[in-house]
Every structure is written in C-alpha cells, then in structure tokens.
Length: 185
Image (cartoon, rainbow, N blue to C red; front, side, top):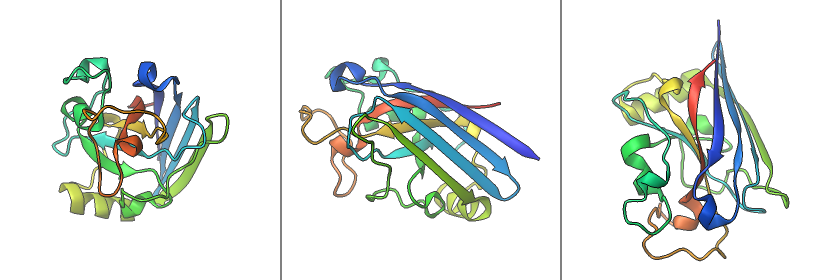
C-alpha cells in the first residue's frame, strides 16, 4: 500500500525578508520507506535552510502560522511564536532525518537564484523508533503536521525581539520563512 501526502509551501515573514519563498513538499510511504521531496523557490540566496515538520505530540492537528502569531508586534513571526498553532519541531529534513538530529549544518543550501531541491528516502522503522523515543508515539501522523522552511542570511538585520536560538544557532538560522500544511492525497 502506498500513502501520499503533499504540502503547498507559502511565504511567512516575506514583508521583512524581501522574498516570497514558496514550493512543495511530497511524502510517499511505500513499505518501510518514506520518500521525501521538497522543492523551494525564491528563498534567500546562498543560504542554508533548516526544514522540519512540526506538530503536537498529543496528536492535535497542527496549523500553519500567519502574521497573526506575531504576539510581540515586531513584524516577525519567530520560531517560539509558531508553537501555539504548529507545535514543536519534530523531524528534520537534513542529510539523515531518521537520526532526528536537529541542530547541525547538514541542511540544504539555496543556490544564487534562491532555489533548492531536497530528496531523501528514509527507513521508516528507524525513524518511527526515534520518533517514539522523542515523543512517546511511533505514528508520524503526517496529515496532522506542518512543514517549515527556516533561514535568512546573517546580513539581515533582526531586532532583539526575534527569538529562536537553538544551541549555537541564532534566530537567523531558525527564523521561519515558509510554511505548509501537510495533507493526505
């Protein structure tokens, strides 16, 4: 049996970053494999873009953040402001999603035109085991998740009110620039 999911990825924070990042993500479950394909356009150029799916460990249906989530009124929707509607960061789309190692430099980098493509085939049993260790349930529930694309150049001036530092990475790395609701197709 094959299960397919898709997200239409729309811009977030576009007024502040001067770009309208957009794209698509598809997730295909076939047997023990999860095939992940993400293509993005109009992202900040030559920039590493963290990308993850976010959701609620209790199974609540995650929704995309909009400018309405800018609770401190600084004009940016930062990572902590997405959590009430989108939940927590769950699975990274880096060089090894099944390891669930979030903060690292192994994410896609956009080209000089702001384009990147990402594709990985992930062993579902390993991912589900790590997911269960982290969240207490092995079910990915993709149709209850949202995908976020993060990352702006260090040269973009961010006010001190923009939060989201993770380990050695500051808000430039974690600032959400695009988001999409994952839906079963």
